[in-house]
Image (cartoon, rainbow, N blue to C red):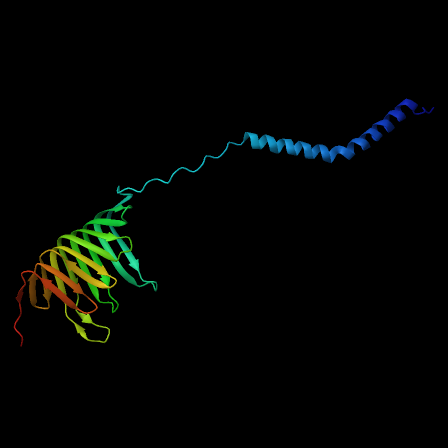
Length: 214
């Protein structure tokens, strides 16, 4: 015995699907509205970023320290140019200097001629091209050859204060110094030595002691 479908049930289903077809037309619009509301809510909930404050003032206080260290500076070709040793160091950012205690510097000239510098305290610029030696200061340039192959004698500079530049080579002091050239010794109240011309200007009470020539 078969049972016929109820007319009311079929009509209800057809009405539901017609209603669903009408609503599906507006579904993308409803989704866009929901996304817009969600975006608006996120913007309201997100905290406003703080405006950047003023940059911190650069002071003379050291921004880093080093102990028993060495710093090396290389040429663009990778060849060692300068090496700085020390037992302690502190960097002052406002003036861009590194103050080193019990310091020793090794520097190579254009012809790879070695120069060394020692002092109780050495102050270097950040580029490693200017050194101020204070306290039992000494700069020694080993004998070698110049750009044209001419022999260069061993040179020594001694004093309580020496200022050394490497580009170009320049050594000066406004305090008493001792200049040693091979076995010759010259004392003066001030010194200005230019490496390119190999000329030393000595002022004040100049006293010289020359070794006997053969």
